[in-house]
Each structure stands twice: as C-alpha cells, then as structure tokens.
Amino acid sequence: MDAYIVTGASKGIGQALCRQLSRSGHFVIGIARSQSKEWSGKRFFVFDLARLLEIPRLMADIAEGLPEDVQRITLINNAGTVEPIGFSDNNDPEAIQANINLNLTAPMILCSAFIAQFKSKECEKAIVNISSGAARKIYQGWSAYCASKAGLDHYSRVLDAEGADVKVVSIAPGIIDTDMQAQIRESNAEDFPLLGRFRDYKDTGILSTPEETAAELIGLMGRSDFRLLDPVLDLRTLPPYEKEGTSDQ
Ligand code: NDP
Image (tube, rainbow, N blue to C red; front, top):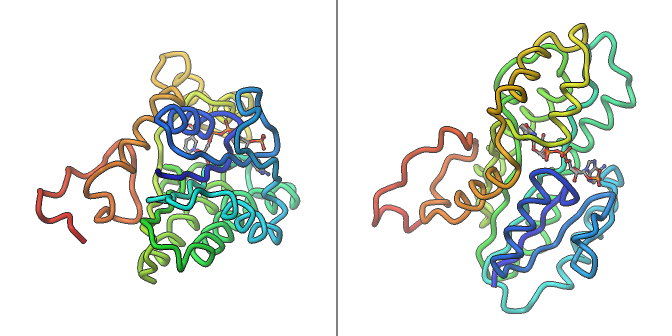
C-alpha cells in the first residue's frame, strides 16, 4: 500500500488529489485548518501550518498511524497562499511573514521532519513540492509569492543534491480554477497589473480543473522514471519518458 501526506487538503488541488488517491485505495492523510465534510471519519489533521515548531510533532503523530506494510510514502507540500497582493512598498509585514511561513518555511520543516522521521523506514520515499510559474517569472504585485516559490524550488534542488534516499521534485502545476484564482481576480489592477489577463483566463475557459491537475500530478508520481526527473519541473512541459532500461536508479 502507498501512503500520501497532503497539505492544503481541504480544497482546491489538495482536495482533488486526496479524493483521487483515496479512490485508488491509497492511505491518504490530509492536513489543513478546516475539514470539509467529505473528510469526516477519514485521516485528517486539523492543523495551522503557521505553528511551525509543532510540525515535527505532527509528522511523528502521522507516522504512528501509518500501516506497517507501506511500500511508498509521499509528502505533498501543496498548501499555499498568494497573499499579500500589492507592490512591495504596500505589503503588510504580517502578510509577508505569513506568506513565507506557509509557502516556504512550513514546507522546509515538513521536508526536514519527513526525511528524519522515515530515515530508517525501508520503503520508497518521495516529496512533491507544489511550486508555481511565479517562482521562475516576474509578476509585479506578487513579490512575496514569487520569492517564496523561488525559494521552494531552490530548496528542492539542494535537497536533491544532498542525496537523501527521498526523491524530491518541485513542480509548477499550471493555472487552476481554485479559490486562489478567485482571490487573484478579486484584486485590483493597481496592486496587480496583470489582473485583466487573469480575468480572461477564467472568461475564456483556459483554467484547468483541480481534478485534471490532480490526475496529472498522480500520473507524474507514477512515472517509471520518476526518480530520474529533474528536481524542478513544470506540469505543462514535462520531459519525455527516459527510455526503458535507463530508469533503474
Ligand atoms: P486554495 O487556495 O484553493 O487552497 C489552499 C489550501 O491550503 C487549502 O486547503 C487551505 O486550507 C490550505 N491552507 C491555507 N493556509 C493554511 C495554513 N495556514 N495551514 C494549513 N493549511 C492551509 O489553493 P490552490 O489549490 O489553488 O493551490 C494549491 C497550491 O498550488 C498552492 O501551493 C499554490 O501556490 C499552487 N498553485 C496554484 C495555482 C492556481 O492557479 N490555483 C497556480 C500555481 C501554483 P484551509 O484554509 O482549510 O487551511
């Protein structure tokens, strides 16, 4: 049996991931501040990831509930926020702090706790960090978001180079019709000059659904050459499969 630990499991991409992984019979643990109805009676930790120093304890509690015969454990750092939206001279210090804590510091502590917690566990291990195109491109008005996601990418490269027995990827998932996109569309052009383009994305129907994106992420994690992939990826431009026989690392 495979186990998945998913942050931001209450809505959007995280909820769709958990729904599909559970439906396929996997052991799924969700984490978020609020628990949607479909999680009732399931393995859900109501937890605010702003409680950074309590994260190692959370990981230990999660580990205690895992089945003995688990063959692969995957941590998916998906919880995130785009706020504060606005030019940096106008960003509230608490909002900057909350952004970096949720988008970068919490995933770093989760990765660190995950690697340490399962060090002696003999099974396959993987970490999927949900990044953003904003890690790699400049978006005026999203300085904290861009910086936090760029940090997440580079952190993932370092983890990869440190060579723990945990495969790490940081992946930009595309543009998806979630509450986060609604929040972006509700901002104003003074704070976010590309507002019109993001409203057009919705109007012209080019946003992916959370279910489509979740299915693609699950496809990625299931690739036979998953462990050979670069640590920084984009779901829209994945490399072709490595040839049979070269993917046995
Ligand atoms: P949503 O806003 O729809 O969902 C965010 C999730 O994070 C929710 O489940 C929320 O749950 C959880 N969350 C927020 N704050 C906390 C917290 N303090 N502690 C614990 N959980 C928290 O976002 P998306 O599904 O759109 O985004 C998921 C990921 O994908 C993010 O990392 C985002 O940056 C990335 N992404 C999204 C894109 C898009 O177009 N939607 C594009 C590129 C990247 P709750 O409120 O219950 O705590």
